[in-house]
Length: 218
Image 1 (cartoon, rainbow, N blue to C red):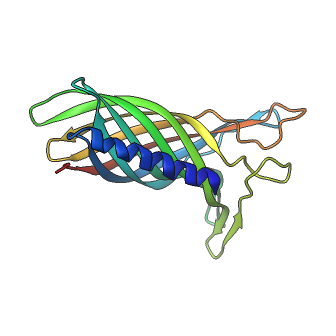
Image 2: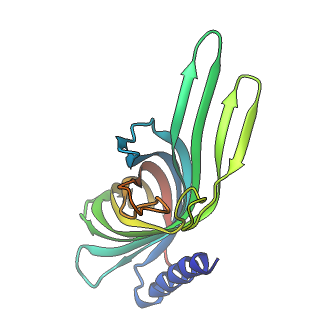
């Protein structure tokens, strides 16, 4: 809970920058995500399928002086994880997946072009995430079961909770505020709770396509 409050406090602080620039704007976005986890468990590389999801975000864009650079933070609800088993035959259908949920703060800096009808932008920055209630899901034609994922540092936990990494993004924003963007977030922290005596490691990766709107600052 303290880490989630930290994320919310950090984002509210970012919004206060709005008072320093008349050209700063706040907005929102939603979109599609595809996540996976990469690493090595028991000496074997993790080679599972990606998991589709959705994201929602509150964001802002604050130009820095008269340059083409702007501070572009966002607070996101992001779905991550991976598909651990997928079998679809005439006799049986079974799909199992790890459904991770995060409150994720991206602190991006982007370079903006200056087109007549809109501008392209590209950039990136650090990403920090606080876990939200997450589940392991198993689904057949007739039954769906869910088990809570345990976050922590102990051997009986499934994953470490707090995550961090780097985010990269690019997009196109029209003069009226509508935009479409693509981002890719690479997890840096090893999420395996206990690593003593082994080289187990697993990290989140996620890419997304989103659309959104920036509101003019009046």
